[in-house]
Structure formats: structure tokens, C-alpha cells
Image (cartoon, rainbow, N blue to C red; front, side):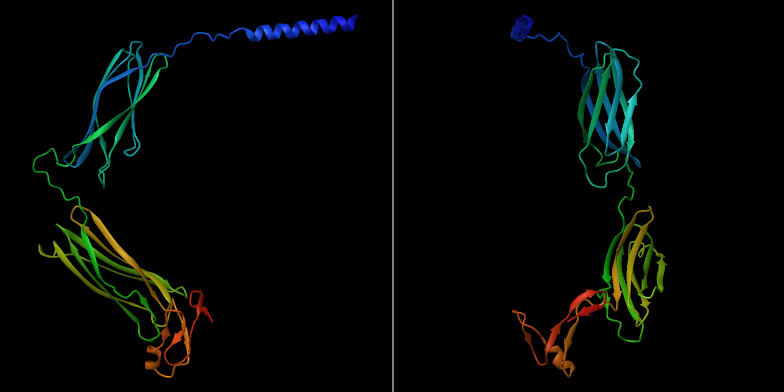
Length: 298
């Protein structure tokens, strides 16, 4: 009898569940909070004397009251929060200093506006670039660095087999509106750890050389010592703009090595490889495989 009652209760429970699932489920009504409105927002980039500034104008409104206004731009690292009193209207008419773009770049400002009920809206305003001409008449600063054209060294890898010091010749042409100084520097160390640091600073002395200066200088590197070095030619103008150009030098570091049984210099000059990789010329020649700095294997 108990088993019969248990089965009946189980059937009733299943029926109740099926009946409940058949009813439509109605979610409670819940409206989104009202969003603030951004009207007539403009942004412009201007060059004013030595400064670059972004001018911002905007009208913000919200019926529930404005809680916070934030303006952002990642490229300029701009992040400003305006002091809003909670009114229904707020006006922005402000400017901010920004760094100069080394290359013309399109920018946007992000407006994050929050009202008193938690409604948040994000708006993006394109910045119009008016910075091609300075707003102060007659303002003509020197913003460009000097031009540095390196003529020498043309040889940057020296065998260093001779016992004589290795001469490195530097030659460069510098041009600018007002050259202030030129620095030539050669530094590094030999394979045994001996340091090398040679440098000289030159200063133009008249109006002609302040506009065009020819650099001619030689430094010496240790003989019979493999070494790796760096060089730089740096020019600075009267406005503090700088331009540096440089490269690397090596002494006694061989990229390729061949083993030959040639008996004279003329035989060596006549040796080589054909397109299929076979040897040509007088005497046998073997191309050695580089294993490391100045380490080769047949």
C-alpha cells in the first residue's frame, strides 16, 4: 500500500513540474539608466609660440544631473577629470599643452561622461590639426636637427695583419641654420679587453662654417689586436637640436677564410669558385666554415 502511495506522489510531482514548465516566464521590467548627451564637441591642435596646445569645446547635458566628465588621449598622455557640480548642463572651453608630433599623426579625444544615476557614455572627437603655422606672427624657431652626411669611413673591416696601427679616417658634411658643435667619437675594446675611447669636439668659428661644416679627422686603433668598435658623429645646433649618425668597425675579425696551395699572389688572385661551386684557377682552394669569432674549420 505504501508503495502505491509513493508511486502516486511521484506521478503528481512530475505532473506539477510539467505544468509549471508550460507557463511562460516573464522577466521583471528594468529600464537602462538615461545616458548623458554630448553636443557640438570640437578639438583643435594649435602651435602658439614654442608651445603646442589642444583647444577643446563641448556642451554636455543630462536631465538627471552630470556626475563626472573625463577627457583622455593615450598618445599625448592626456587624462583630465573636470569638476562637475551635478547640474544638468556643463560647458567645456579649455586648452591643454601637448608635446609636438615628430611625424604628423591623426588624434582623437575620448569623452567619458557619467550622470548621477550611473549612466555612462563614451564619445570620440577627431582633433583637427591647425599646427602647420604658428599663431604668433614672425615666430620662426629652429626645430629641425642638423643634417649629417657621412663620407668616411668607407672601410669598416680591417685585417690588421700589419704591425702598424690601423688608421681610421672620418669625413662628414654637416649643414644647419646654426651649427653649435660637432663631436666625433670612436670607442670599444680589443679582444684582450684593452679599452679604446677617442673623441674630439669641434666648434664652428664663423658664420659660414656655422651653416656648413666639413669634418675631417683620423683616429688610430691598436695594431695586431683583434677588436670591435663603434663610432659616432653627433651635431648640435644653436637651438639644442641634435643629430647623430654612426656605425661599427672591426679589426682582425675575418668573415671568410680559404685554404690554398697557391705559390704566388697572382695565383691567389686567379682563384675562386664557379657557379656550380667548383674550384677554378691555379692551385687548390678550400672554403672553410666559420665556427665562431676567427675560428674556422675545413
